[in-house]
Image (cartoon, rainbow, N blue to C red; front, side, top):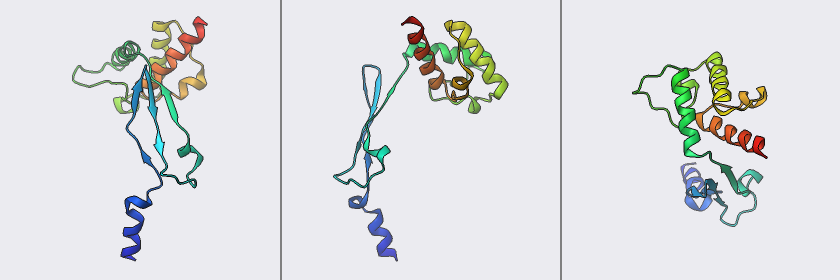
Length: 135
């Protein structure tokens, strides 16, 4: 049994390896190498690209979140910060969204607001809505 387990864990049996993310013109590209294997799930065979919001947008969102939650200066707020980890409850999240709508002159639909969990999620949604409004 031990030999079987060690064979499963050997590098030659890994189905896929994530390559280091690369930023190109504001896009974060993540690619996967399947080492010639075709039995990978479809989600591992696709190249995944996500748009990252401008740093200025993320900074503005961080400021709004910090203000709405009355966070002390020693608490770090970054794009990866989750609202729940910062102590936000559902009412706080609604107030954050309202603050974002006011600051950026946008309207966030309820379905979209429910999908926001991090500062980066909010910043990405804001840029998407601002782009949509300017088109």
